[in-house]
Image 1 (cartoon, rainbow, N blue to C red):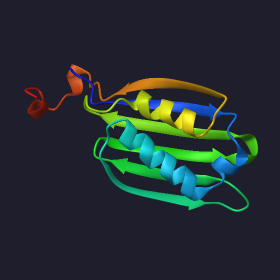
Image 2 (image 1 turned 60 degrees about the vertical axis):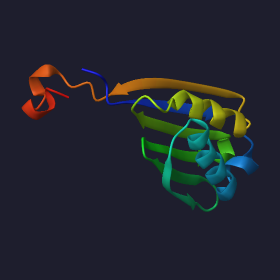
Image 3 (image 1 turned 90 degrees about the horizontal axis):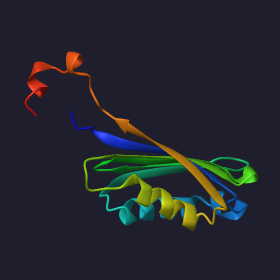
Length: 127
C-alpha cells in the first residue's frame, strides 16, 4: 500500500535570538516555507510567549507545518507533515534552515499511513 504522507521532524540550531523571538518574522518564514515547497496554505496561527519564544502552525491542504522556538538557545523544533506527491517536506525544512539563519539542522523522516493489510478496512482495499 502506498503511504499517506511524509513527516519530517527537524531540529534547527544556531539561529539568532532576534529571528526566533519575532512572531511576525517566524510567521512569515513558516508561511513562505510552505509556499516554497509547493503547498497550498489554508490558515495559520502563531503565539508569542513571555519572556521569549514563538509557537505556531501553518495548516496546508496537504497537512501542516508546526514550530516551537527557544530563542535563548538559538533552537527551533519543527515538524512538516505532507500528504500526496505534490509537496516535498524537505524543501520546506531547507527553506526554514536558510531563512532562520541556522548554523545546523538535523532531521528525520517518518513515512505515515502505511497500514498493515490485516487492519485495512474492506472499503479501502480497492483504493
